[in-house]
Amino acid sequence: MSDPASGMQAAAEVPEFERRFSGAVGGPDDVGKPRSLWTDAWDDLKHSKIFWIGLVLVTLVVVMALVPALFMIFSPNKDPRFCDLAFSRQPPSSSAWFGYDTQGCDVYARTIYGARPSIMVGVLTTIFAVSVGGAMGIVGGYYGGWRDSVTSRVTEIFFAIPLLLGGVLVLTSFPSGATTEIASVMKVVLALGILAWTSITRIMRSSVIQVKNADFVQAAKALGAPGGRVIRSHILPNSLAPVIVVAVISLGGYIAAEATLSFLGIGLQPPAISWGIAISDAARYVRVAPHMLFFPAVFLSITVLAFIMLGDAVRDALDPKLR
Amino acid sequence: MGQYALRRLLQMIPVLLGTTFLIFAMVFALPGDPFEGKCGERPCPEAYIQAQTAKFGLDQPLIVQYGKFLGNLLTGDFGTTFSGEPVINELTRALPPTLKLTILAIGFEVLIGITAGVFAALKRGRFLDNLVLVSTLVVVSIPVFVLGYFAQYIFGVKLGWFSPTVGFGAPWGDLILPALVLASLSLAFVARLMRTTMVENIRADYVRTATAKGLPRREVVGKHVMRNSMIPVITFIGLDFGGLMGGAVVTEGIFNIKGIGGLIFLSIRTREGATVTAAITVIVVFILIINLLVDLLYGVLDPRIRYE
Image: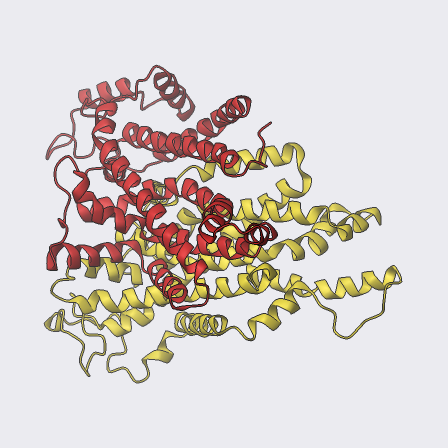
């Protein structure tokens, strides 16, 4: 359970288990394709426009983050770090699609290359939050008792600190020595992750509690399956759905939070290129050169929007009550 | 119910202790020399540093400092800043504008968010519903500070409907635009949440029964559907209170409000540990109390919920 993707894989094993299980108690043999929560949801998702739009946008941004050079093939300026003050704040033209920023750097190139740190912060923070929060939620929800009391109290302690204030505090209390791009990204990830996991814990815990008393879990326990195995093959796949939905939606939120921290001047630091830095640089000049603010802001907003759409679509597909 | 409230209040104590300790430890870890730049353009005299270090106990271990801080807090003493100003004075100056801003923001959330959600749910699948869904999605995906700058530029500077910055004493009128900006994200969430829960409830059996009994639609929607749909929304608004007070850092910066967010941000930058810890503690206390009130409200909204 290191990231949402492996959770999906675990979830895909559910029908396999159910088939074996129903065979063991002499239930009806396979009647066509075995149905699970996820196959049902997938049937639903296939027809959801929102899902496909979200998926295409997310794929596009992820490709942008992985191979930014791909988007630079036809651009007149290919190097995001090549700047010429003579072009400072010039509006969009055929020689620079999105215009130039204050330093005379090409806004298009910087916007494309800015995807990587933003996406990295979003993805890594989500992985951090899901692993820590998920583990805490499972321990509290599955074992109950004193373990539940301890994890609940610890969660409450972290939950009471507002994300942004805590982020500001963590980021400033970290030594600002080495400033490679990775180090800068990891600092922001840690600052957000340290407070972001609590919401995942709450959802995971309540979801585990719901599944815990299901018949198939009781059956597995009665057959003598050890706790770790029960959690891995029965509890996890059946309680992950709400966590994945929230994780996908919050991924967009973390990207926006990174931009906000950069805007406050304590998130990612130049020479890193990110949407947050670009927006906060441009915000001061919104009256003279709105294009500098417009393009990175639109890219950021569309990315956040894409993750929300994806999460929303998956939630709707998983929740039969809304059909 | 009294017993339940008391138990919850007692449960707040470990949380409060843990949170303040966490903040205290982080502030303790703030890098740099607190006396840097305190004495003008020359290093502070050794005697001054020694006197201040002794006065604030800066050379003592974390746990001792924390113990002292707690002891003082219990007697209502929030400590003093390095320049000798009692922290309580700074708090009483900074808290009212932020509280006003937050209250106004929550007002907008309730008023606009819930109304939009209710109408979207009643006109499900029609133009109004889609309008609400699309506009809330757009609002959610634009970062608050971008929205703030645009709102300030368009409504404050270009159209002149609102004052672009907030004046001294933070009058309510000046706070309308910042509060709308601050509330925008949560407002969109409230609208969507209200719509979703209403849509779920509108098809519930008890609603069909109420309609079958011949109750007027206004009453069915108002009394049965809306009241039952409020619980998740109220929960969200309660939990969001902290987010709003934290998010005020950004809004206060853009609109020049001298509030608690700005105070914390400035104090972290100038390493005024006492102010940071005190201010965040106050916010956390507010959050915990609001959450308790929300939990008690459940019983009013849903008589099936009993407190033991």
